[in-house]
Length: 120
Picture (cartoon, rainbow, N blue to C red):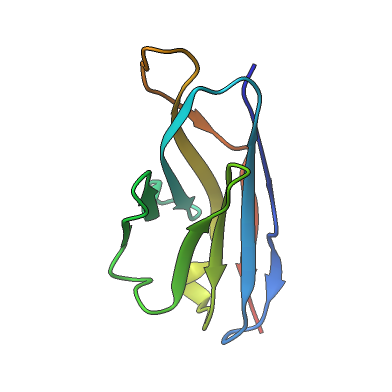
């Protein structure tokens, strides 16, 4: 059974920093891509950043130059968020595309979400 556990959210002042993490555990054959999404009150969930298995990354225009996505060998994905703005306030979700079996059949899993609040 695959589990995703997120951590790292909280309250921060504008200009501050936070680092989110999402750890994937369970019987996994391969991780294909890892993403961070966010959803602000009254808005649709949006893609913030993604990293593929070849380590290529991509970012929403609104966070380029401020956020950095990275992974480690233990299937943890991080989102380093710097220079936070009021408009970054949202619930942040990790989204992992992985295969349990070989041959790989990708499926996607979601974390439980972690609240990030940027406020003075």
